Image 1 (spheres, rainbow, N blue to C red):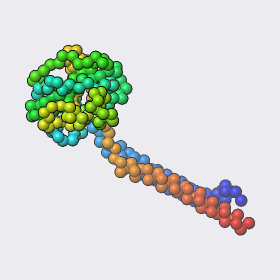
Image 2 (cartoon, rainbow, N blue to C red; image 1 turned 120 degrees about the vertical axis):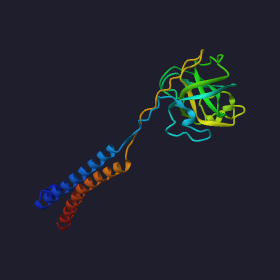
Image 3 (spheres, one colour; image 1 turned 135 degrees about the vertical axis):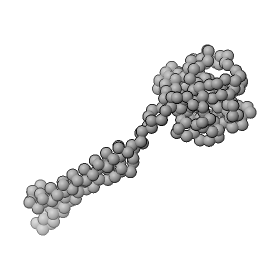
Image 4 (spheres, rainbow, N blue to C red; image 1 turned 90 degrees about the horizontal axis):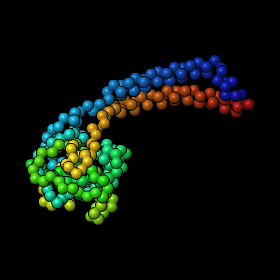
Length: 250
């Protein structure tokens, strides 16, 4: 006897309707849990564009917080001459700042990174501008200055030997080995909002708003869907067992 011949019997039709009812109830519970997950989602709406002193958001030698990451900050201090570094394989546009060497927007070229010492004595890496590949470093401002820019996380150290002279990543951990007289250092680097003469400004867009979903409710929603599918599978399995039992008797 075929599977569907058995499934059309009244008791198995009733069992199917019961299984579908259970599955529908579980699906409704899953939808409710999904809606709860979306309702309780936390949207990152922090203000990143109003300039604030870096010292109010970050401390030297401390890991960058989510509140400090991507913020426009101001820093008072002075430039350290002779500690300039060229970082190659970068981009001038929005895909460059904070996106590593493989960003997707802007013209390819080099970034000029300088050593800035804040008034609190801590060192800070600053991307002061963009130049065409191999253009070199023009004459830059010296002495004390108040600077403004976007504060972003340090990148991972490059795999190649950074002492060979060519660098493609902005790693604070590597830079402090090149700079002289470093006491303490900020864990991130600053992308200057306006480049000095002879350089192009590196675009540093505002960070995208993040949404934190309630994963617990999301997992519950998935579980209810699985339970609903299992109810229908259980009906199929029972009908299948009945078919195999009748086949054995025949």
